[in-house]
Amino acid sequence: MKSEIKMNSQSESFDGKLLYKVSGVAALLVLFTALFEILITFLPGGYTTSETVVDWFRLLQDNWFLGLRNLGLLNIVMTTLGIPVSFALYIAHRRADPTFAALAIIISFFGLAVFYATNRAFPMLDLSNQYAVAATEAERTMLAAAGRAMLSVGQSHTPGTFLAFFLSEIGGIAISVVMLRGQVFSKVAAYAGLLGFGFLLIFEILSSFVSSLHSIALIPALGGGLANMAWYILIAHRLFQLGQSPVKSI
Picture 1 (cartoon, rainbow, N blue to C red):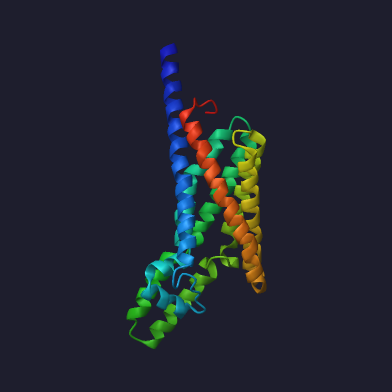
Picture 2 (picture 1 turned 60 degrees about the vertical axis):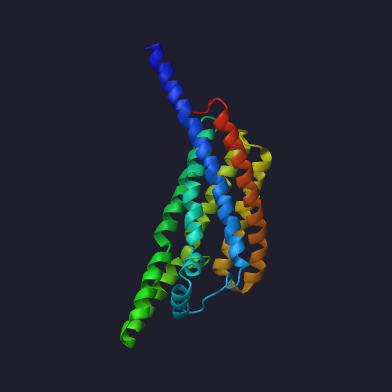
């Protein structure tokens, strides 16, 4: 009986260490994806904005990757990589602060679910391909109307995508509060998360509902982005440490 308990404990400890290591890698990949996103912005055509649905169709036909990226492709990658990171943060705090850790991960996963449900990058690519081969003006008109409906839901940083980003930022703020209370991660990491997700929430509100302040909204976006990158570096470092040390929180 004792040997059975010991084996289960060792297996659980091994699984916990593996989770922390995988999540540390995922956190760094989120960081690299964010840096790649910034790099694309400064490349020729990287800051292309499309005014009409036909402009979107043309962009997707001319450069499908840039079109998908402008419709949130890299956000899909980053939110997917964030799944193991969120779970690892919950596991690290589930003994120290179980209620708020659970609340934080639930909010984050709700945001993830809404984001997946509302993202229209790949459906827009399909409509673009159909538009390119449409034989009649009536077909093109119908496809353009379908594209406008897609954009009303899935165009990034608009009211259509606000709920997904809002829940994600609130989830990030919540887990940062848990980090501050739980003392598993450094206070610097916790405050970086609070600043990063807080500024990004302000940016999301301004860009979604106060379009006239778009240029001003870029200020909290920049601050939030830098703080968020620092957050991912700090939590990745700590996750790797947890992956090497005995797992007591599991």
